[in-house]
Image 1 (tube, helix red, strand yellow):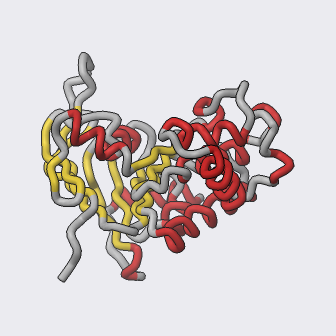
Image 2 (image 1 turned 135 degrees about the vertical axis):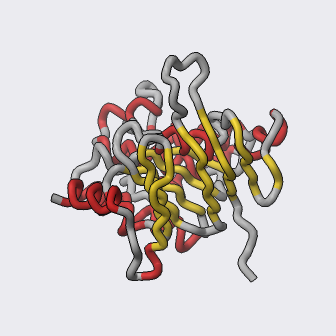
Length: 251
């Protein structure tokens, strides 16, 4: 018997408030995500993938449709507040997500201090997470401006992981990284999933990273689902649009 999805959206629509556009940003989206899965959301610019990721993170609410977490419908402030403690979101621009005037160790410690953990626990967990993402201890007291973009991305990941989230959503985590840093980031995300059971949702326009990391891939076009690919099957059918998207990106 298959387990219940950790996240499920059904017949989901979204239109940005005050938008002059007549079309929806998302339309009739259905998706089940199971605990420990690695799920990719693939699409070109304007496809709605970031909008969907914000809804899945609880940072936006659907205009209509159903959103479930562990079988319970998400509605109302308390439900969303409780859900927010189970999830972390890695934003596309890591440099814009950190305070450039705070040291690296302090940035990673912030979520723990906010939750009133003891000084000893804060120091232990922050140090452990920085080690896991491969930040040299000699850099822990540096400022963000002294680090490369790839290192800042890993600092943001370390900070996100201090609270032991069930679900980690990464919006374009590879877009600003060179090949070397992209490879490091891919391996760190795989380790988090395989060793700690973190459910990963990866948003990207890069098919190579998505297909390497993910077990299931939702393909969006102009806010609509055009494909849902089960990568674990080895051989899978894809629609004409997805085929063209892959060929264009891999050329």
